[in-house]
Length: 326
Ligand code: MEV
Image 1 (spheres, rainbow, N blue to C red):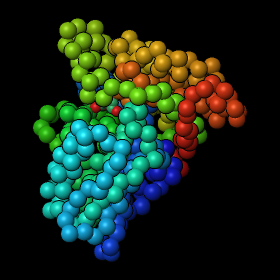
Image 2: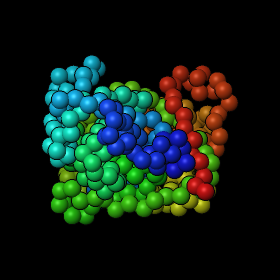
Image 3: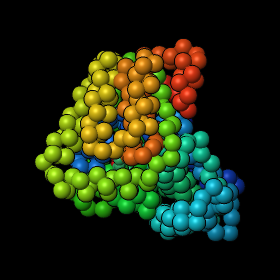
């Protein structure tokens, strides 16, 4: 999950094997936003780290460039995916591959599964078309797919996935399509454990972002204050993470959850999970990603709680380590 996690190590190696043989493979990690979701849509910074979980795209030689079967998708989801895939396939000259996707990431939980898919497919098709899949090229292509999934995303998800390293991210100032956001690589100053509680299915990101946009357009000063404060927390939390001050980072996460709840993107189930994780000893806990009526909560622990503590809470959890940057 961190710059030193297994995901980051995988992604630091050539991210896509060149298409010389019959098969090629590429990985896109998921992400978890520690601070600043939603505010990032309005130009404020957000702090996010890549996960070791993600999406693998595997290509085998075929007559034409095509995406294989994905049994778990509804017809509208499949149409959306085909449109997104088409944008990337045509931009890379349609290398003749049949692509199979597999994922270790829970879908629709705010953990960046669509961005991970976009990054994996972009890396694979760039590599197969003979182009080096640099983060800049992957970003430009993956953004096209993300736009097909989410309309006008801030870009934080696919940027963290493409860089595969912890980032303080700001969306581009100019509305010019395809412009990359501004990034600062973040060092991790102390070992910690992140616990991700999967609270349940939620509305799509686009819907939650649009509902908040309507409230923010109606009361711009009030919501502007909330977003600005969320962005400040992301900067302060980044400094705390780099200095190894986990208590300060945890506190910033707690305050950020309060602001997200004030902005109307939490829910009773998310609040209960936050409370449960704090009672279990988390230094900080908050919803992560778009939230709304479900999704995931991220909690920061100095070390993993004693075995059984989280199981007893009844929460479905994933854990991952933040390892100090050497
Ligand atoms: C991204 O995972 C969550 C939001 O900040 C939307 C975005 O950044 O596009 C809510």
